[in-house]
Length: 386
Ligand code: MN3
Image 1: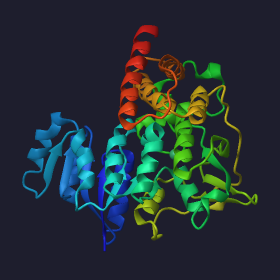
Image 2: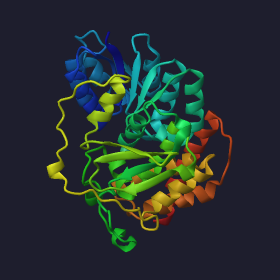
Image 3: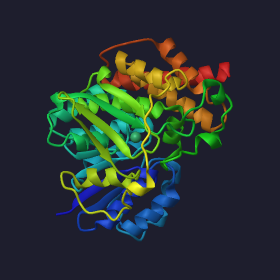
């Protein structure tokens, strides 16, 4: 029996690697849905090769191009964000891999869980924004959220056969990004090109900038809180520049379990797709001879302000993580377009959080409104202050 998979975000880094994993295991997995935001050329190429039942291009400008290119295939072509969410509920789909970028994953994720689809989450922002709602719906529908993020996959693997209530704390490992060891002043004039050069992982541009600011690790702290039902004080970030230990769980008896491997996202992708099985992979193996030592250090929350802002959001909860995420998406976009400087990313986020203020117990509509409002406030700040 093969799993019928919908890949939301098939043209991104995770989407492409998911297709590779599926191609290596044609007896186990079948792709029935592909969706892309804007990259219609790659979407067409993927669809012609894979021949899924459905293809969605979110940006309707490119609908006609996709439709025309796939005319002679038995593929239904759809467009729009709404259909990215709608395809998750199709009867032909039994597994949804969410590899959408940022906030856009929220509604499709909720819709998939409400329709009792098994789900692998490569996106962390949905949990950051509305983790309380997502985990509640998942519990109600008896759906396990399978993490694809390498650190959370590591923790999930370490927790196999364990009781979550016996976790003392977790250590989320961080590579430290391209600016590891920099002082605050040294970050002042770093360029987009420098920020996009990640030492260990090759990823999309949004997450690569998040790694450079260390917001990525901040978002991952919030993601971990929801996935593993942890208190803020149980989550610690540790910089490990080799990115071989992907994270560590420490139990109440002091015993620690770590998951290790070469940094390759295909591994956590495959683990989630095949779960609860482990299947063979031909990926390169770790060699002890290539690594004579592992390094560990504490991250600098004063230099990497995004990390302290995310920690504040983690502790405070309510609408703060949602504001943090929206302002960060706006600021990262502005930085990528060279409208603001690197250190203005945390300044924008801090200002947006201050301006909007704390609110608790939000429902989904209120989260959606908070996201919208935060984007407006962050954009205004950028346009008027910098
Ligand atoms: Mn990660």
